[in-house]
Image (cartoon, rainbow over all chains, first blue to last red; front, side, top):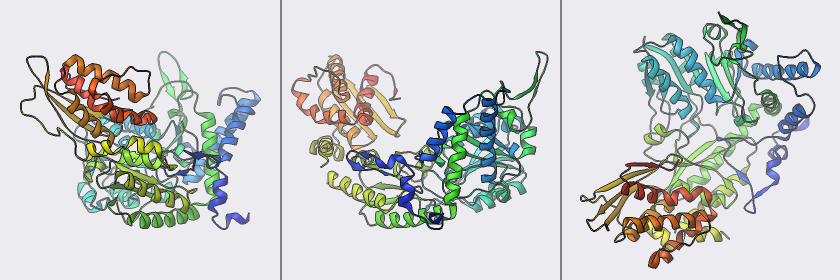
Length: 410
Length: 151
């Protein structure tokens, strides 16, 4: 238990089998966890075991394996519930990913509650997945989508937001952390002010979940979403937290098995709680894998993870800042370990290709956040995003690779 | 070290990307198309002036993109000028096979060697779309299809 009192990044790296491999003959410097994170052995093993030893469909059979599989699946829900400090396990819905979670809320809560002229407030920081679902439902209902601006540092403009809130505001959907530039938004104040205005709030926690403890009862969010694969779990599993009273009043999302109470051709009644929103055979093993991932990060502890990542962020910001003609996009006061940057006269795609040959994996492009790119008047950026397994050597590899980009471009 | 990168980012390519030729919007262009790569957000507008004799009298472009896409667009405008529509399309066909690393009998006559500098792209499959974006826009312009997307 000794290693739980200190943060030993080299030990953590050994938990992730991917780091034993090389890329283009170089040690892998994986700085693209913002897109999708690597998986610890315990997640891989847990999933393998679930397939090899306990697999059966859930909520169906009376046979032994179905019972074990159901217990593991529902056990994963309890892990997520405790992790998010939700009041009630019925408030945790498993989806395919964060995108589906947001679409679910837009298509059910939004469809049932939005009227022509009602306002949905988003921000310039949003990922396309927290923009497009709202535009789709706005088109159907006659509601209007508005975006809170950000300032030149990439900070959410709270004062403007407070002025935008009003009796027409019905839904506020804001990211907890910007995927493209790392800004941490003042979610608590955003939520409180929205509630004062009578609106419900959805927080997109896709980038927050891997970096910080998320507490539903402390935040008082009405809906909170994140995706499993960014928090070291598998793909194909996402989470939607929703307050019980809101979920109860919402119409179902997808129709099918598991979400019903009683089906007749005359009338079908729906299941209560999370079951109403989980039609069909769910991603059973993915949920079990997510549970293992959440247990893994909690054993390390977010306090230590966050301290480690902030140290890396400061080091990387300082090191990259010394490179001529490198511009860091987004310099918010409170940032997660995500650095977007550009190099004068060199397109991010060329940066990405060249650093890749040095074993450095970064994301280049618009990061599914084109309104944000427009705000900074760039078509694309290069983005290094850090996770608990990154170390100073990764930063050094990035810096040296960026310098070789400049060498090649002369 | 980085041999394939040097192969990709040859001097000629860097020169074309930093000083793209025919980077303008000719007023007398009679065909144009907009190319867009939704993956990276790169855009290119290709402008052609087709003469009555069936020859491409002028070719130009404007846009934003990486070194590969700018260099490819720049070289394309130089090469297709004075060619017929059919010749230009034939060159594109061979060029596309070349950068995809497919079997090809790429022959653009005297321009073959010039375009061969882009052959390094075949080692970087993710970048093939960068190299071909302007060419797709060029054929769309000839066919009077105003927009082309590489997805």
